Length: 307
Image 1 (cartoon, rainbow, N blue to C red):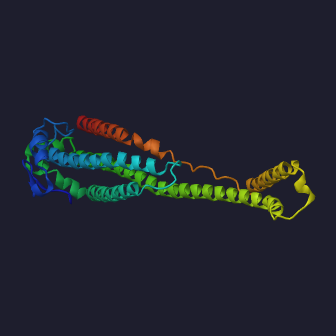
Image 2 (cartoon, rainbow, N blue to C red):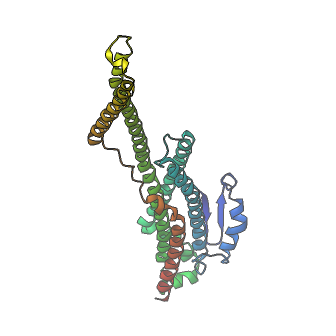
């Protein structure tokens, strides 16, 4: 594979340039027990090359699954903070985190694509599947079992298909996150437009109120020009004029607000997609799917062996 270079023989597994890939922990603590048949491999009863290939496939699937499990909660948490309709502005630090997570998600999607294409190339060529069954051509006992009913090529195909389906499920989960990021970008812009419209509406209402007060304030201006009239002699005129000013200003302002309400309906808050809730349990579902696929592969292999 492009991720890891290895040479598989009927008796040995040679990992090339393992130090640059930081595989020491896997080599010392997991791989040895898996090849010895003490791990959780479903091919423990098959020849050595089956366990070697499954150990490599299992390692990379677990690595890809771990990367997805790390990215998924970070992306969901960031998106929930960004699409909150109560926020009046977008946090630039959250956008930077989302950008970095988006780049990591793109790298994960590329690695999953290469992993799937590599397995698919082998599945499309029956000769390659036959060549992977090394013990069939070197061990007389294995060759005899192959001729009497145990088809090792079919076992190898089932093994590859099992991990191909797991990679396909991981790719679907990554694709859901990508779609969620794209949808959330639209929601962020809708939120900003909604808050901008609210501020413009408030500004328009205040402008209408100022206009109403200014219009009836002309009455007070008329009485403040120091021109003599008979109205100044009546002490009740001050309260009458003041009441008319406030009452008229209020009536005109309410009239303008009614006109504004008929022609400019307030925007509804944007709908947040339900994928956020669905994706929160994706890691648990993904682990359950992997276990079910491993059990299905084991049952299929046992049925074929009995046949």
